[in-house]
Image 1 (cartoon, rainbow, N blue to C red):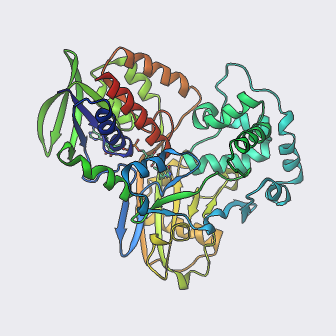
Image 2 (cartoon, rainbow, N blue to C red; image 1 turned 135 degrees about the vertical axis):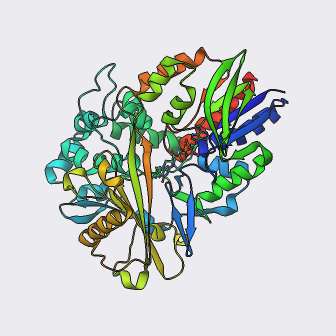
Image 3 (tube, rainbow, N blue to C red; image 1 turned 90 degrees about the horizontal axis):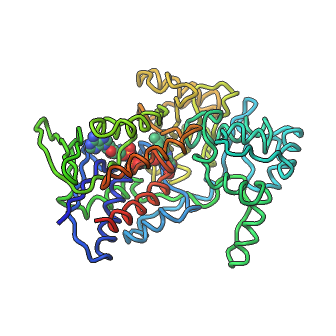
Length: 465
Ligand SMILES: Cc1cc2nc3c(=O)[nH]c(=O)nc-3n(C[C@H](O)[C@H](O)[C@H](O)COP(=O)(O)OP(=O)(O)OC[C@H]3O[C@@H](n4cnc5c(N)ncnc54)[C@H](O)[C@@H]3O)c2cc1C
């Protein structure tokens, strides 16, 4: 029976294992599936810390239903009853601009009425259908794309905070094609964004699907009754003896037609042979493990940088807060020169994040804008966040709970040239049959993307074994 080893039990590793079991069953094939995780808890970045009745998300707080993959996984796992939908309040999103929180309009009409952008900025957006064509054969940066199609003010006040909210990254360096392939395709297929959205709306209407044009992200944000950890636990539990926690894979060599894994568990080292190897870790861990194997592969992995980010969770007695937290939270454009990137009002988005009568805010610090702030000592960082929340939201109440989660290398940055790196990686993998790389470092950083890529990886592996 072939042995399939998966390194990493984050969403990508767990989901690859889950879909592999199904695909092998469908194909009437048998294989031993082993998954190794160096940490003591499954889920990787997708983790919930439960403390004093609060559900504190370490990283992600849920996924959007604008892509189907997360909800398909929920159905495949049979855990629909554990899904919670974000409250309607959460549709109100804010941008901190000109020294105040301003509501991000939800519809194009509301957008043109709002004062978030100057008259000139709004007029420039209206010229989008007449924008210059995309440069040919150029991996355009998000910054260049936004300036070309929407103008400099939209880049500064809308695109920059959006990129910060998703990647904690720099739009001038990030690749449009790799970060937002749907937007890139909208332009290349329909010749423009407004034209593309109108065509899509018409195509959907023909298929009987109602859709609204929206200035915010489409779909509804959903999560789970016990936070995102629920999803990790549900994926982990059927793996039983196949899931090995606190086991680190330190190196990999190629021997015969397979791979020899050097693994260590509480200081004890041993070797294990596998026919198929899926490395479902961050790119920097993959390159460390695979360094004895292939120089070209390692060079490409080393060229995928990560932004550091710290999540500061502050719990309050709602009665002392003096702010209704009526919305999703806010993001801050870089030009405002604030010390936090933005904050999510978690207990308004998902009421189960805080006990009754309490409120929970999670502020983001660092990113490529201010990497040094992410690694401040906890006391200093919490004091900084409290000063910022006082200036921006007028919150001076004493928190009943304060905790920080530091992600040294938190979010992979798909820079201009990322597509070429993926081609280099694919070319090297073609020379290493049985080796697969699958994590958020490559083709999408959202939970939805991780599920889609894991399902695809499982299908390919089940065909090959
Ligand atoms: C602050 C933050 C907020 C986010 N918010 C959202 C959000 O709201 N919505 C959304 O869709 N996405 C969000 N994301 C992105 C999302 O969390 C990630 O893309 C996703 O969780 C990545 O999963 P993964 O399995 O690819 O990688 P990881 O979660 O990084 O998993 C990799 C696993 O490999 C293990 N590992 C590493 N090396 C070894 C080794 N040598 N041996 C054994 N195991 C090893 C690690 O311990 C880890 O468990 C956020 C990310 C961050 C950091």
